[in-house]
Structure formats: C-alpha cells, structure tokens
Image 1 (cartoon, rainbow, N blue to C red):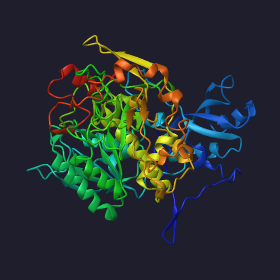
Image 2: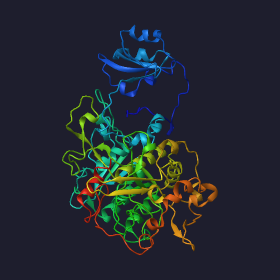
Image 3: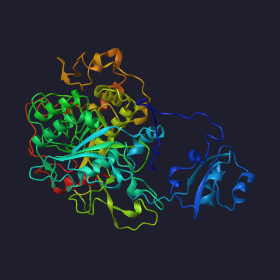
Image 4: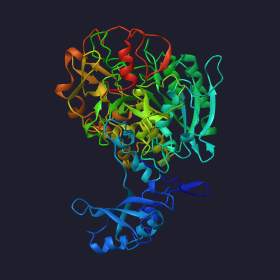
Length: 577
C-alpha cells in the first residue's frame, strides 16, 4: 500500500473542485504520473532497483535507452509482461519516466513468506479506487468513541495533528490517551496515514481507509477495556453537540454489550438514533459471539447493543485469507449473527475485513500489546529485524471490521457531502458484493471444535463492502421517500420466515429495491442456508429468552464474557487462520 497524493482539490468561492486530467499526451504522462508513489522518497544519489513497464512490446532499442544512461538490466520480462527490471540512478528516474514509450516505473519490491502478517483489508474492499480519485476523507470529522487515541505520526498531517478534539468520559480519569490499545488500532484502520511504515527502505504502508479524516477522540473505555452505558451516551451527546464545529459526519462504535430489552427502550439505541437523526452516520460492531452455542443456536441471535438498532450500520467480520483478492474471503466464525433478540431485526447490515488486521499501536505499554498481537518489524521494513514493532499490532474482531465501513462512509461523504445517513447506508448495502460460498468451516486447534458457517442474511447481511462499487453507484433515493432502517423478519401463518414490509423504508418499495437487488433469493435465502433446526428454533430466536452476560460495556474485539474460556478470548483477539 502506498501513501496517496495529498494534493487533491482546489477551492473556488467555498466550493471544492476536484480536477480530473484527461489529456493523455506525453506531457500528461510526466514523471509524477508514471513513477510509483513509493519512489518519491528515493534519495537522489542512490542506485535503485526498478521494474519498467512499456506501452508497447519493448525492443532492444527501448532497453538501450536505459542502459545508455548508465542503467543496468537485471531481468528481461518480455515473456510475461512488457518490461524489464533495471538498476538505475535515482537521479535518472524522471528522465526514464519521460520516455513516451514507458507506461509505469515501480520499485523492485521485496516479497516475504506468507507467514508474515499482511495488511489486506484495504485491497479487499477496493479502497484504492477512492484514493485514485483523490477521495481520502479530507474535511470529514469522525468521532471514535472507544478507549482513546494516542496521537502518533499516523494521525498527523505534517506537524499538525488530525485529532481535532479529545475528551474523556472515564470516571476519575481525564487522560484521553489509549492505555488499552483498542481505540488507536480502530482509528488507524479508519484513517491512519501509515507514516510510521513509510519511507526509504520500507516495503509496506499501513494506511487506513480514509487517511485524511479528522478525528474527534471521545474516550469511554478504561485501561482494561471496560466502560458504561452512561459514558457512551455522554460521548454520543457530545458528538452531536460538536457536529457543526468539527463537521462530524460519522461515529464509530467498536464496542457493545448484550441486549436486555427492545431497541425501542434501550438507552444506547435511543442515543445512536438521535445521532443518526442529527445527520451523523453511526457504524457499530455486530459483536464477537458468533460461536456462542449457549442456547443451541449456533451463534444466531447474538447481535450486540447498539448494533441491534435498525437505523445504524451494523458490521460483521470477514477473513481476508492471506490474499488481496476478496474472492477467497470467508466469514469469521466469531462474527455475531442476527436476527436481533426481541425485535427480530435483520443484522448485520454488511460485512468487512476484521481478521488479523494490522494497525496503529498506542504504545508497548498498552494492555492489548502481547507477543500474540506483536507485528515483526520485518513485516514492513526491508531488512528489518524480527523484533516486535513499537508502532503496529495485529488484532481481530468485528471491532476491526467496523472502522473499515466507517472509513468507507467518510469516502462517500467526501465524494458527496450532501448525502444523508440513510443514503450512505443504502449505497453501501446496495453496492455490496453478494458472491459467497454456501458454507465454510474453521476448526479451533486448541479445543478441536469445528464451527460451520452458513452464508445467510443473518450472517453476511447485504454483502461484502465494496468501496469502488459504492462510489460508482449513481442511485440516490430522495431522503423524503423514507429511511434505511434494517428490515425485521417474522413468520407467516405457514411458518415461513418473511421480511416485514414497511413502505416507509427505502427498500420497502419493491420497484426501487426489488429482492434481486439487496435481498436476492439466490444469495440470501438459498435452500442450503435456512435449516429449520438452526435458524428458527422457537426457544432460540422467537422465544422470550434474553441474552446473559456482564452488563459492563467493553471494546468488542476482546469480549466473550466471564463464562467464556481464555482460549476463546485469544482466538478472537488474535484471529483465525
């Protein structure tokens, strides 16, 4: 991943004009456009190993123009690509790129063994498409309500910090730094700029989805990851009051607790609804209870509060499977599943990468920093040591998937600041990728338990986040036509499970959102995904039982409740293979 170009727009009378260059002349292909961005830090006096790709099938004459300037050929790639590998002087890079037959020049980047951690979430959701259009969240404020943000290089823009405001709601502790390590990691996924992993000799840049957003840091979790409803509600209230001052358009809530009543009564749900109605997109973690079989329900009905609220965007976690291509991605078995208790709302709304995600570390003294979460420096520094990084760690959970979606929301708002929260939610859900396997499984090596996952509406919602598809989608339903509340389900007189029709909801109109668009039968309701004994057991989903668990609110990447084993806790925090 490379740092995006920060030169992105011009201002004219208060309106931002994004300029697109369409002239494909030799001048338009000047060195800045044909040199990869990670060559920009190359010291002029050094030799650099590069791969040169040509617009045409290269001949010896093309290669001779490189060697004639003192370069040396390392490898001829004409059997595979139109290019070759050369060693050239850094001072000759611009001249090389100005060759009209040269298409692109990039470093001869080192590759590492697959066992080294990778940073694949941005590729899985096609975030680079937005960066190529110079959408990076500039001017968008995001309130991260979590364990605090420890400001480091990844959260700065030059000498200035992008953390515009900080406040603690932790009783007796006014510090807004992150002693737990959760909030900083979340913020890095959402909007870190990767500065701690970029520069000469670096091979990877851990950049977030919207790397130029401004943060409002509202700390509600203490150094053990615990908090309270009142702290979160106070933070939400503060975000609403600061909305205009800091242009807060998104709230990220990578936290939760079990439900104890309908969302219509739950105070956390009522708070997030007020933020939504104030014009703020609220993105919430689904929870990590997908393996919970306490009620013989295979993890169904385990969505956390306030992710059970139909207004907000609730996010489940996918596993990138060690590749940048999402085609092989699988659902994480710990990702909580719907429908919600009491109200039977279809959740999660969308899924995004959340497993083994590398992001910013608040400091090696953070509670979450252990040998299990440590990232070796050689994962992002060429010839780096195997010692643990002091700036990045790897964590897993729906907490990590949530800021991926929050970042995507910021990109949409960067593209069109007039979007309402309902329009953002509708765009993200409608454009989500909907190709999944029928089922998958994962075996916990420590316990020997195999978890089998079905890809139904209560597991993957409307599908897998796709930033490119969302930005390309031109559908814009007028806000006056309805809201984007997640639908509820019920059982008809024949016992079939059906969506509850609500014409005030954007997709309640079959003409606008027909089943083939969002709730496509072939994707969501296939015969292999709706086993009666699993989904619709009366004592599981439709009964009057309530979830049990600790009433304390916590960062959900580490929760399983006091009744869960240490093995289960670690397998969520440190991910699945």
